[in-house]
Image 1: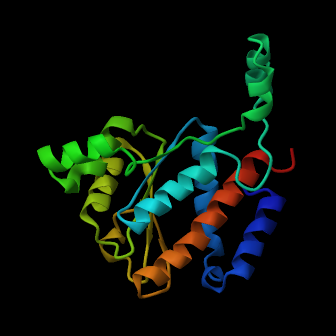
Image 2: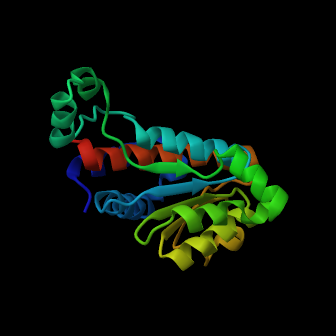
Image 3: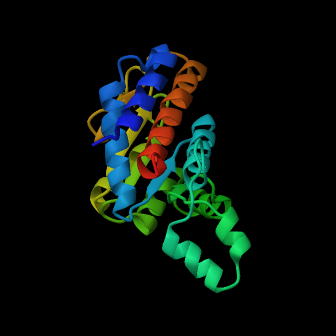
Amino acid sequence: MLKPGTQELLRTYCASHPALADMGPQLAACIERLTDCFAAGGQLLACGNGGSCADADHIVGELVKAFRIRRPLDTPLAQRFQEQGADLLADRLQGGLPAINLGAHSSLLTAMVNDVGGSCMFAQQVVAYGRPGDALLGISTSGNSEDVLNAGLAAKAKGLWTIGLTGRSGGRMEGLFDLVLHAAADTTEGIQDIHSAIYHAICACVEYQRWGEC
């Protein structure tokens, strides 16, 4: 269940971005599921191509370190740093949520493209990293990116919950991913602009669920 402060934050995002106006229930479901995933020790794997790969990187950046609010380290971890005489680290480091951009590993990706084929490069990483209870976020403006769809298939086989971030039609993502969030636009740049608003709302609310009102 979303905290009152998280609910208010989500309402603010939806009110500030007309494209999100009708997405409140879907976004709330995504935020709750990701919050539960992280609370249980799970991680988020994200993937996409081109600008969507950059968006995956952006999402990882908002989750692994503080985004909008202060994230103090959990007290036991901060104390362990202090016991080692690392008070500066205890003060500077922030609470983080584990997230990985599967498009960020150039040596692995080029090896996969050369040896196996690019359509398998994200799926291979899901096989290696994915654990039951983790989540996969696949980003494809068309909904038809073969490597992202294959990552979704691998995620289902490994027991991950899957989120698709796509355009108006949803393409082949529809029916494959557990939750598909549609950007109501028809051009790549228009879809990506809305994607930015969607994932900023999700990241901000997931962060507030964990560290807000502390």
